[in-house]
Image (cartoon, rainbow, N blue to C red; front, side, top):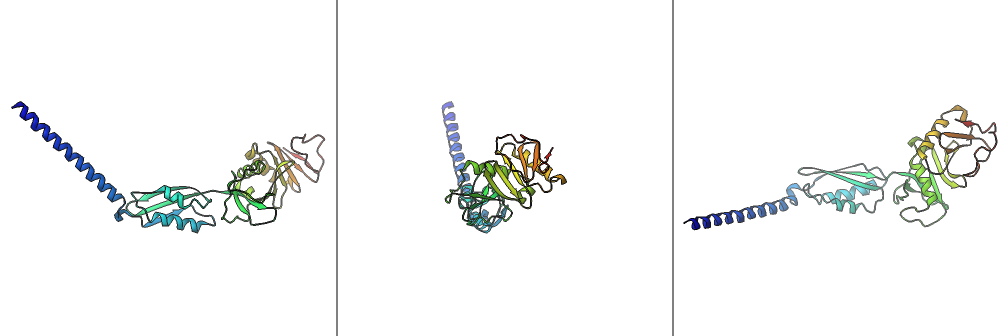
Length: 265
């Protein structure tokens, strides 16, 4: 009698187990069906953060891909894939509004200069770490970086150019807009301001501190008429007139400063 009771109980437990498995299978299948069904298909796409000249193409690519998805099955890999040929796009952030809404925020790469070839061909925006934004129109107020080589890949590798870009990347926005050209010569990195002096940075060390020093001196009336500001010693800016600036590494003040080249502390 006891054995029969145990057997019946075992059968009931077995049937319950099979029933649970069936319910889970149905639930899983239902979820798989629901997440890709038209009941939750994306129909309202909002795209933010796009400002580059290729923005219309970026928006069209993202919207087309998003409309093939649902709010329960977002394929971010597909969104990255459709924007892979647009170097202006750095990152994508996605959020959904159940059942039909999707918001895509585009994080764009910000150029700090425009690459200009020696022959004067169209300028190409370039970021602070050397990524070329081909297909994007360079803003007029971006300073030019002139390279002699005619063939450049998707990213700059020239160390001298990268030092100049690092300095431009550290610039306050107002001074970057006033910058006209980035050069690398015997004095190191030199940036020419529109209607202003040359800024001699030398190396890219302490770039932000050098920019702050330049801004402070440019605001002083005593710097009016200077043809260059020597920023190679952070915290000690030399405003120069017509006298040449010594090459990087040489003593900056071997003789007392001339009257047209005062040192501004």
